[in-house]
Length: 484
View (tube, rainbow, N blue to C red):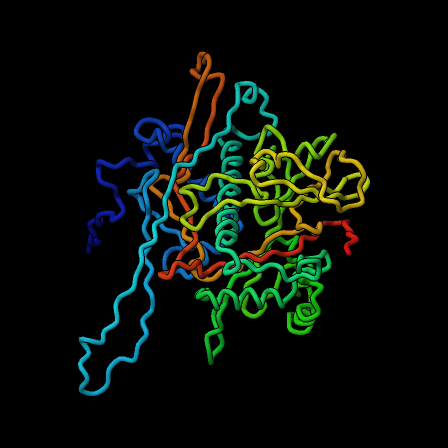
């Protein structure tokens, strides 16, 4: 008996004739980039930069979409361009007694109390340029695409996280005591002294300030009987370090944490306290011509000797002082209605890299720019004579009695709205000067452009409920202060 032939079934994965079969019709990667797919390289580059930038952002774990319960709420409007507004809606809860029995309800209803909150967005662009000389040298072993993607993703990540910190810092300081926790030190005028490092008491107080201001907790879970409000306590590691010496925190880690190498004392991480997620930011000093540290840890590291610090610190080829108090930087969309720049007198402590001596200076916000503090005035505190500082000296934000200070952010659900427009991380180009026979210009540049904005969330009563700024002592390696 002849074997029955089974007709071949149609391949459900076969492509229509109009589509391109990448397996048989493409002989090389270059072929994929030619013809109708000529913009594929640009789209891949943009995707790489955007994803890499978000992964490098220290807030990456705390950014989510609407309804995620994360501290930073991200919303994208694909129809929005520069100077447009993306609208969020807030609704107040209702109270009242209701009615009983035969009582008429129609005259006792509550009103729906809601408010619209708009975040303005704007176009942000930056680029890196090179000449043909770089292509001829190739000393890095990487292509121009790889090099440009690396530096632009680092810039995009750093800029985004610095803008978030700066905006929240300035919004809180503008709101004043309702959103700022400071003045709890043992120094004159309740200023922080160097020995007044961060403690568990301050973390608990920050949480209570959030609750009192109406901050909703993050979704951190709870036990089987009740929901435990959970919040985020975010700070540079230089400010969190004293917490490890707090007796209560140290005992909790020693007695309640896991034994062995996973213990927080060995791993370097921080345990929850009072159901606050403690997130540390390791701020590194790199070789960039521009700002160092972060808005929560303002830092200036001089790569050349300073002959006279009273003339001002900073430089002319970068935004060296952009993270310091009293300096105004451009936030896309303006940072919201509650955003405001600093005024008044601020302080900076200079620490000489060779002698270890230190000196406190003051400066006025009106004279400070992104590149320089303007003129510095001797504030009468320190061990250093003269105003010359060696190469590699460190200048940090300080208070009026000379204590190096930084800042922490306590945040709840929806502390900030991060609004994105129709383009984000889009690749841009520029070519100039004469080109060679391969039509390659002598001067080339590639960069990114994005449309976005940010602002702290306001509730229907005009409060900024979900963020608190905490002034904390900053630890500086090797520094020992003598304070009255």
